[in-house]
Every structure is written in C-alpha cells, then in structure tokens.
Length: 481
Image 1 (cartoon, one colour):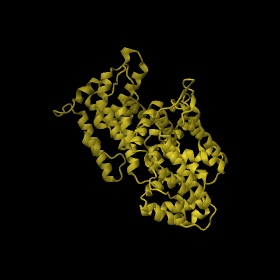
Image 2 (cartoon, one colour):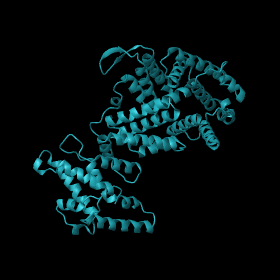
Image 3 (cartoon, rainbow, N blue to C red):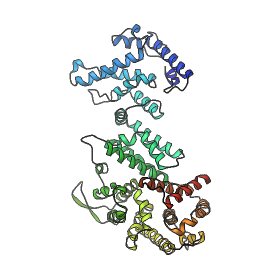
Image 4 (cartoon, rainbow, N blue to C red):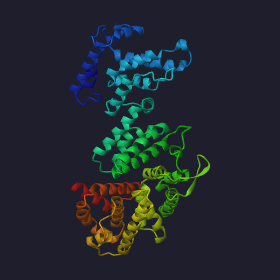
C-alpha cells in the first residue's frame, strides 16, 4: 500500500498520470475492503468491522467514506470532553493513526490527517503513534501533502524531533540553493510555514536555539547570519498578520534580554524617517555598550539591578543583534553619509557586529583599525578621480596580522564607499572584478550586495544611480561565480 501511495500523483500533469491515479485508487479500495492480508500486513477487515461497517460499503468510494466517518468521530469525541461513555479510547485513536501511515500521500486522506494532528486525548501522554507523526512530517517536508497551518503547529508542538528536522531541512535547503535575492530566500522560508507557527513562543524558542547552534558551529558564517535575519523578518511579518485576540507581544519572544534593547531593535528601519536612523543607531549602540562594557542594567523581568558580566550575556546580546542585522548594514551606509559626531558610535556597532569577543583588547584593536580605514576613506570621499590602487591603499595595514572579523568589517566599509561616493561609482566594477574576486570573498560580498538590493527594493528605489550600480555589480559577481 505504501508503494501504491508513493506512485500516486498529487497534481497529475497528463492523461497517463490521471489514468494511473484512477487505477491506484481502485486497487487501494480492493486492498482495503479485503478481509485477508498477507502475513506481514494488518488485518483491517477486523478494524472496519469494529467501526460497524461492511466491506461492501466501500467498493466505490471507500477511502472518502472512511475519512469522513473517522473525522466526524474524532470531532464528536473532542466535544464530548470528560463524558467517558461518549469518548473513543486513546488506543483506538492510536490504531487509526497507524492505519493512515500507508495512505498519507492520498489527497482524500488529508482531512483525517489534520483531524488526528489537532486531536488531543484524555490522557497527558501522546495518543498518536510516533510512526505516524514521523511519516506525516517526512511527507510534508517533501511537499507530497499540504496541511493547514494549525495542523502543522500541532504536529511540531507534540513531536519535537519533527520540528528539529523541519528546521534543519530548511537550513540545508537554503544553504544548498543558489538564490539570487533575499526575496527568494524569504519565499522559501515562508513556504516552510516555520515563521508562521513560530508565533507560538515554544516553537520560536526551539527554532531560535537551533539557529544559535548553527551560528556557533559555523563560527558566525555570513550565510547563516543572513538566514537568521530574513527568518526574523518573516516571523515579525507573520506575527503582525496574526489576528488572534490574545497573541503575545513581540518582546515576549526574547524574555531574558534587556527589554529596551529588544524594543529598539524590533523597530523596523522603514518605520522611521531616514533622517532619524543615525540617532536610533546611537541609541542601540549605547544600550549594547552598557552590556558589553559591564555596566549595570536594570532587567525588567526581575526589577533588580544586576551586572551582565558573563560571556553568555555578551553572546546573547550579539545573537539578538544578529536577528536584526539590517541595522548593521544601515550603520555602514550611514557612516559614509552622516556627520563626524555619530561615526564613533556607528563604528563601535559594526566592530561589535563583526567581533563580539569578550576580550576588550581585541575589540579595541578592531575598532582602532576600522577607524583608521574609515578616516582614510573619508579623505577620498569627495575625490572624483580615484583608482583601485588608491582604495587598496586606504584599506591596507602595515602588518598582515589583521583578524578575519576585522577584514570583513573593512570589506563592508569598502563596499559602502563604492556605492555611496561619486569616485567609488567609477571604479566599483574594476574593484570588484580584480580585488574582491582575487581575495576569494565573492560570496561574502555577493551576500552584502543582495541585502543592499533588498533594502533598496523595500524603500521603493528604482531609478537612482546607486540602485543601478548595485544591480550591475550583482550581475557581474554572479557571472564570475
């Protein structure tokens, strides 16, 4: 039966597949109505008899009839509540879930799958078979069935291994897929239903913990940071669309962190006029500094003043900032546009984003090197006649001991310079084709430009010169890749 269901086409594309579907359903009806099974099969004849039906009732529309009957029975059972005499036993529901396993891919069975997933028995332990839950999750991840959001939420709440597998499956798909825009990444993420069901705080925290482990295992890989950023955007959008009367406030999903910082980061850049971006970034920087530099912070959850000194606190604050990494991109952009007085705060924020190290000396060294590069870039900002050599000299260091995180920060500053200075526009393509490709950082810069293009698109920018340049650079990097 499992093999037959695997052959069934959910969306038949031609007359042959339509004919095959009809033959498969006829054969399934014959197998289901038979009272004799092979030695290794379940005796469903006894099962059907126990429901009060005869085999003859099922020859024409057997599958639909069974599904309709069982769905009605499960719904009636839920309404009976504590009325023991009117309830179906949990063992019976368990048998029904096992009965569905070989039929999972059939569209006619989907209502029963959803009824089972949203059903809760009278006992505290799980009434559905783990074999059933694993099979449904596997089939759903392979896109062989469609389930309503409430059924998926129930599946992942009652079977955490399925939630973990779904999250890892999404990660693997995003990492292995060559996406050309953040819109494509967001589409894949939304299609997984993970952001939507993450509106349940228990789901969100488990998914977030998996993200955290991925970030640690990859040593803060830019691709992983981008995935977390886009997932957070999709989650916030899903939360805003959630019309439940008693939904949790967004800050409740980050309960152990400094709440004013959470609220500040949750503020979407496009909810503020661009003229206030630098001011808001300074506000974020001041709060992060208070955590990182061991200043005492009043934590709203306990209403007690305590010092956040441990590395764990520092990491959690950085991980929170990674969720809203769009502010880091805007900080790099504002550095090339803002007045001198805000540059110190913006450089500190970028240094923290790229080097969240517990060692104050390392952070200071990163900040010193970033400041030196920034100052040299600002000296070139008004020059209209630049060469690639000039830009390389501005980014150079006397020694070759620059840390990898500092190199990433410097590259970010260089790309911002190319995009937002008139002299940078003229040498951008040459710089990308010769310097970036030669340094083997194409994917990193490609990701940065993709995020920039996404932000420009959200702002509705279409005709500006910088938008055209970003698209040209993206096209060139993809061609080289």
